[in-house]
Structures are given as structure tokens and as C-alpha cells.
Length: 207
Ligand code: FES
Image (cartoon, rainbow, N blue to C red):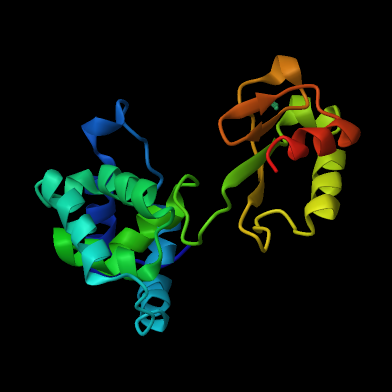
């Protein structure tokens, strides 16, 4: 258990406010402890990226437009991050800092939220995101063998992106297609009853 101090309490309250966002359609029950433990590391991470400025003033202006659309309110952080990621493909430190300034919250606050939710990413992903389901139904029907085959065919490990930026490989929990186990998502396409042999043919459709 991480001991609390005032700064951590402040961060916790800010995070609670962020996730209390009615735009999400349902209220999120947040267990704040993992976020408290992230906060002390977040500033250091952001600092190490301080010198890397890869986005142009024009691109940063696009973020300003997104932030303004949500009245620069911290309570809309998640929709702001979602739209920013849809625009740029990922949420690196520079964009996180720019949003932090725009809605007037500490960069650690943004970092905590980005790293808490699996659908946010701080690194660019490939054109096609391959998600191999490793939920129980898929696991018992050979999901691991599919992962091994994909890793060998693509020359990457789970969590990595191919050099040509075409494919990113991820292992995920149940994707809601248990009747088709083992299931693999590629982009928005669901492929069911996949075998290590079939997955290579499927991949070719995306080449
Ligand atoms: S366990 Fe794989 S889709 Fe449900």
C-alpha cells in the first residue's frame, strides 16, 4: 500500500472527477489505488519526454480545437483524449502535456488516465490492429497457438508493431464472440474458429 500525502489526495480527487463523466454512457467505478501509485512516476515520465517535440503548431492547434469543443473542462478529459487519439493515432507525452495545459490539470493527471484505460495508447499502432482473444473459451481452443503463429509470421511479439507499421499484435480478454472461439479481431473484422493454419490465409487479405 502506498502512503497518502496531500499531493496524492489532490491527484486522486482530480482523477475521480475525470472519470465521473456522463458522456461515457455509464458511470465508471474507479478503484483509485493503482492511479495513486502511478502519480509519483508520471511527472518523471513526462519530464524525460520533455525535449521530444514532434508535433507541429498546426497539429497542436487541432488539439486546441478539440479541447475548446469540450469547453476546456477537465470533466471531459476522456472524450478529449479519445478524439485526440482518433486524430493522431496515439497519445504521446507532448500531446498529453498540451492537453494538460489546455484543461489546466497536472500532466500526471492525464498520464494516470491514459495508462489506466487499455483503449488509450502512448505508442503508435499499426494500420491493422490484431487482437487475439485469450479469454477462457478461446484459450482452451488454442488461442496461444495462434499467437505463437502470428509472432513467428510477423516477426514481432505481443504488444509490438511490424517495422512496416502494418500490423500491431495484441492479446486481449473476451471479445464477446465465445461461440466462434478461438476468435481474432483484425481491425473491425471478427474472425472465428481460427487455426494457426487459417490465420496466415486471413492475414494475406490485409496485405
Ligand atoms: S473468450 Fe474469446 S470471445 Fe469470449
